[in-house]
Length: 93
Image: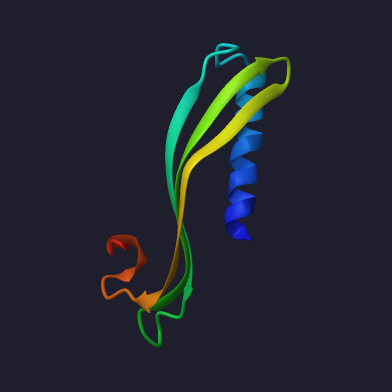
C-alpha cells in the first residue's frame, strides 16, 4: 500500500511541476524507478519482509494541468529473507 502512495505522490509531483511549465507539452520524459518497501525489526535480527519494485515511468505533459503517466516494464519482487548487510546495502534479486 505504501508503494501505491509513493506512486500517487510522484504523479501529483509531476502534475505540479508540469503546471510550472518545466516540461515541454507533448514531449515524453522517461524515468527509471527502483524502490523498496521493507519492514523488519533490526534489534532481533536482519530479517526483512516487503516488496521491491522496478519500472520505467513515462510522463508526457498534455497541456494545462494534465500529465499522461505510463508505467512500463513493471517488475515486482516479494522479499522475505535475511539481509545481513541491512536493507540499504544488500542487493535483492
